[in-house]
Length: 369
Image 1 (cartoon, rainbow, N blue to C red):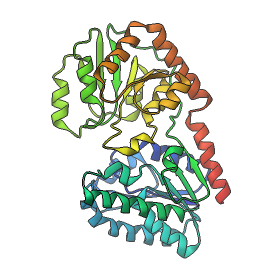
Image 2: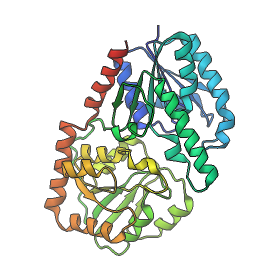
Image 3: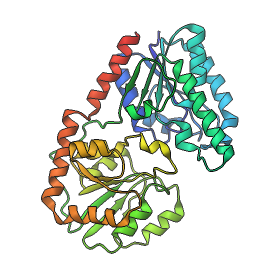
Image 4: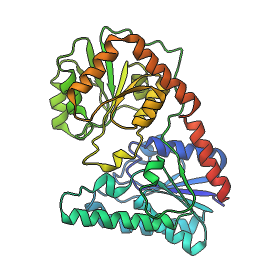
């Protein structure tokens, strides 16, 4: 019998999520684990299998964003429920709101265990409260997610702060942060450069601080910004590529991204906290990757961890002068830059690494099985 079936509906099979991969790999070390997903882009099986083995995909082309996706979701739910009834796992690991309904029905019918893993609170992440209609939709979506989470045996999420946004939740709640696995190669020498190097390794889109960052560095000497990531806003990419000290390297494999981060002088991660309220509660991958690489971070989130570990500089999201000062402070003070990076690496080894999160994950499953 299969111990665990993990269900994920997001488009992770053309660019698998880091959290997905870590959780699946960890579970497969100890348990018989199967994955159900959705091949929304109808990618060739050879390409999918290069990313992830042992998965079964719902083969229906569908758009990525709501509301058009809602038309297709019921078909995915029916498919998931049928597959669960055939496989009969002891535990379902349901990732996000889009998968929870069929998993909850299966749990209720067959009296199995349900782990609800919240990567994103959908209303906070995707529904702007710009008018009365969207405010109602926001409230209804949050309430629906609350009710279903209460029916899970365990609620896990990326931070305790995000868990506490649930008004209704099960007694058993566990934060499993997006901490990095240790992939730092101390034998790999850093590239010698004349310029102070900033790494931005997220998707190219609005509301991630790229406009502010490029405005801040445009007139700075001996500073280079290296950008990687999938282009979601071509107009923004064209705009930032017109700046002389910016290099765009395209969309890279995660292992190559980590090499760029480890070879940089500082990692940059800004999040818009007004249009995407969830960002107040989520601790992004980039903070933990910076810690793992021993590189300081400039960010506007996770100030409690950044201040506790003294691993970087906190700035305001759209404050160009603060951002410019943070960059020049680190550029002109190599000893400070190294100290902040070393502090982050020390905190990573002691507290903020995937091995520790993996043990939390195993404890959840030991208790359920």
